[in-house]
Structure formats: C-alpha cells, structure tokens
Length: 134
Image (cartoon, rainbow, N blue to C red; front, side, top):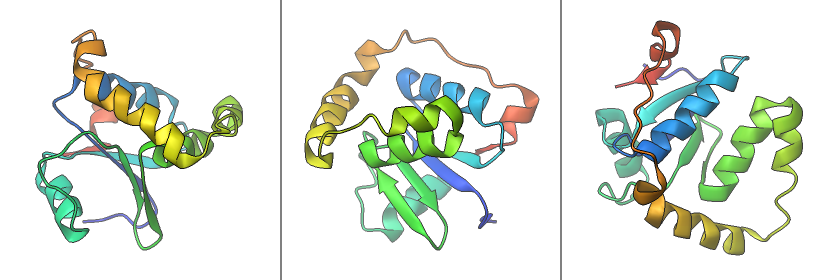
C-alpha cells in the first residue's frame, strides 16, 4: 500500500555505495518522511515500468512523492537534502551548476559507484527496517 504522505527513495539495492547513502539518510530522517525501495524489488520494477523507464538500469536515484512528482539524479539528491532540513537544507542550495552539468558528474559517480564503495554492508536497526520496502 502506497503512503501518500511519504517520500519514496528508489535506489540500487545491490550497490554498497547506494546502501551506505541510504544508511546516511536513515540516520538523519528525524521527521520520518522517507521510505526506501530497491529498484530490483517488485515495487521498484513497477515504479520504473509505470514511467516507461528501463527496468534493468539501476544507476539512477529516484525520489517520488505520490501524486506530486518524481525527481532523478542531482535534483533528487538536492530535494532529499532540502527535506532533511537544517544544515542539509543549506547544502541543497550550494548546487549552482545547471542540472545538465551536475547530472554529468552524477553519471560519472554512478558508473563508478561499485568500485568507490567500501563493500561494507549496513545493517539497519529494527526501527529503520520498517522504512525499507521489499
């Protein structure tokens, strides 16, 4: 069941770097506004399919607010920071590059994310696991 009041973050569930990023957000989501969905999951695949997006390309982070919007790459990242609030909201305003240019950097990072990651697995707490949709 989709919660209309939450923001859904779709990510590559098999990527150590992505999992570390999700762990970072989980620790800072004090307002309990995010749910997390692996792109490889049934809901992740449905999300991609419903938008005619490639269902086998997991290099893009998506932020989805049901019945409102979905954002990708840098725009999604900046909106996540904004939603976290406080000092993270300030960071979201530091991106002064046009989306096309900042997304180029995002794509370079995405292509190399597997080798960048420390291959460490983050084990979420029981409370955090409730926010991860399988």
